[in-house]
Length: 110
Image (cartoon, rainbow, N blue to C red; front, side, top):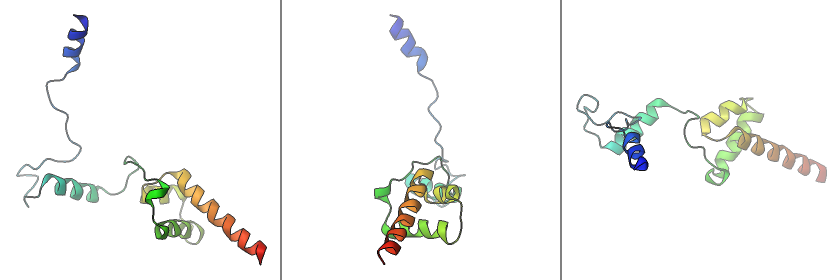
């Protein structure tokens, strides 16, 4: 009996609000679909660290090289690179370290 009462008290009467505006006529004058509206809203919002981070396997070789180049040549902070590419700070650090170690190994062999 007590479990049923707790279950009833946990349920809220109003539904959870979405993080993006729903397709009401005042929010959606172009008549976009919900998925298109969400994608547009996320693109306008920009990059943030609140999104799910990507893993190393999700990054292409070109993106990995660009991350290393941004840090070593353009001297962009690792935190800013991580926020821009939606990856963790540790992953940026790992990519930079491995790239610098590879360069040192190549120099030793020559």
